[in-house]
Length: 229
Image 1 (cartoon, rainbow, N blue to C red):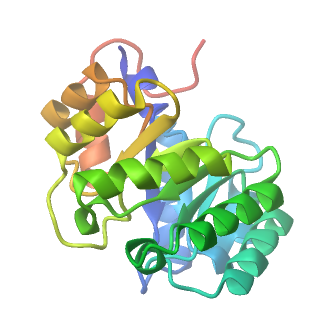
Image 2: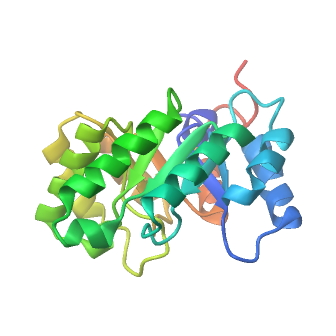
């Protein structure tokens, strides 16, 4: 793997409460420089991000639905997803309603995923399970619901819930899934060793803070971080 190929598997973001034009512009510039596959912003900034990335075919516009807690009313999540599509989003990360899930309200969780899947259409949809809130058995059940709901990825966390990177737990989840759905690992990933460990186990995408993402990409040799070719 070279630098360009590594960057093409990493999402970066500006999704903190205080982030405004300056922080988004900084992250966009780094996304373009290193060719990270996705830049994420909070929903109100999607139209601005889409304008900034309009000429960058391989740097995508991303945003969350129901971020960060996942407990928004279903109608609110649906409205948010429609607004993201309208404003030019190219990938969505839906925060599952973890509280409803832990209460055993599986039908409600599944119906919400299916609804957002329909609104997203052909756009890639990742569903965030907040692994740090769940047991291993609950992780398996959440994965089952996400696959039944038609999403493209299971995402391990938002990075807002305390806890570590869950490398061994992700390994167990990957064994359970056995390639049935793609996985995005996020939250607490900091090093090239973390990246390599998860690469060896088949993780397809990573959500990594900007500083660590740059350090990981720059640890690879080969092509510089510019467009391939």
